[in-house]
Length: 176
Ligand code: ATP
Ligand code: MG
Image (tube, rainbow, N blue to C red; front, top):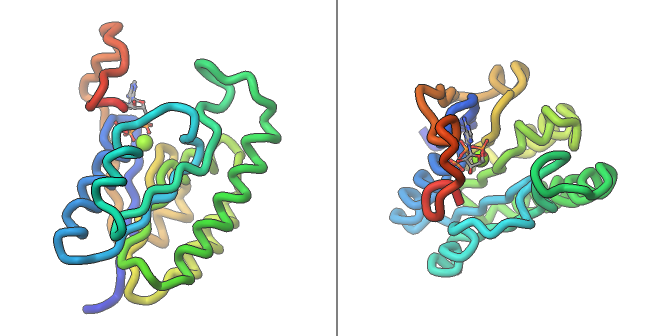
């Protein structure tokens, strides 16, 4: 079976982006090329943004966002977030059509739909572009039913406990 899979990591529990990164690490061990394109992220430094350099040139990570939208430290106009999200969609399409990658990960794309940065139809268009053998991973909470319908593998991260609920702030190496 050479057909690539459509994989969705969604749900409110922690582990969606880290699951996608784990999959990338596994795939790189087979000499695959992997590209992760991140929506929303771009203002904070996450460890993977630096570790991506250690895995060059077969792992590529593109942070195509401006950071949190309407929460925490954000005071940018929504239109700015929307503009960059549109550009990020174009990057995704270009990367997919290059056929250079065995696996493409679109990080936080489900959440970007949920907060109306991008349209559901944009994501469906992207999914339709998937080259036959390429694997496509879509992360982010609130994955739409239409996307779940198109996927081959869907995992919902379910929160049982999260240290944040005890007031423990985001930890280096674990949360970012
Ligand atoms: P991670 O990137 O750690 O795998 P995630 O992709 O599942 O997390 P996101 O929704 O992308 O989760 O959240 C990004 C940030 O919010 C991360 O720092 C993460 O640890 C934190 N986070 C994730 N789930 C929760 C939760 N249920 N409560 C509080 N913070 C959370
Ligand atoms: Mg995430």
